[in-house]
Image (cartoon, rainbow, N blue to C red; front, side, top):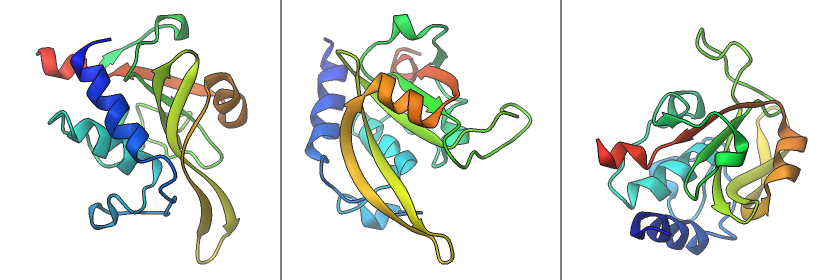
Length: 151
């Protein structure tokens, strides 16, 4: 494990249990996160600036072509229940998780309990990668933002 991967893990695991907040903003850190803010915060600990939204984050980093090639810090983008769409991702991207090794991911997960206004419950948690993919499929893209540091 590299020093960068260790720092990502340390920062991410310190957030376990922080509640999910739909549309969380930087002023909510470290008390609440949504999935993309959580990833932005964790990579920010390495001075890697990622965009705010999942669909924009999916465009950053080196593409990982196969799930068998996952490394700690890789980001896995899935459709989820409510994908956001653009020309590059017509299948939609609705959720992002970070791979932490041993078949596990960490993410700010949620479950919608009310539509208008939107209310979701959940928080930062560790889950089995296969369980997350099965629940939120299809898998859309995997990227390696740590490669940004090497450029």
